Length: 118
Image (cartoon, rainbow, N blue to C red; front, side, top):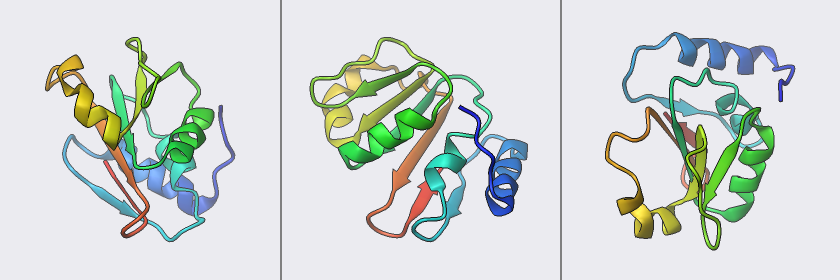
């Protein structure tokens, strides 16, 4: 689903989309739309989104415009382009994925500093 992003959200998306491969930190205050931002990034292959709470997984899933798999509790993904996983479940299922299976990993970490790591 396409969203009309606010100017600062669009700026963040444009910056991330222009970056070379690497590790980056996007830090935004609570309520500024981190989920809408990271679901708007240009996908370059398979994406893993790690979350710490079930409601964050469902929130992110509802914002993507492609098939999304879940890896948490009773949910198991089936090779979708985007997989959203709870950290707790993925730790027990790491053998399901090769170490180079994902091209982009997004860690939606809200509990400590309201950041999204990409």
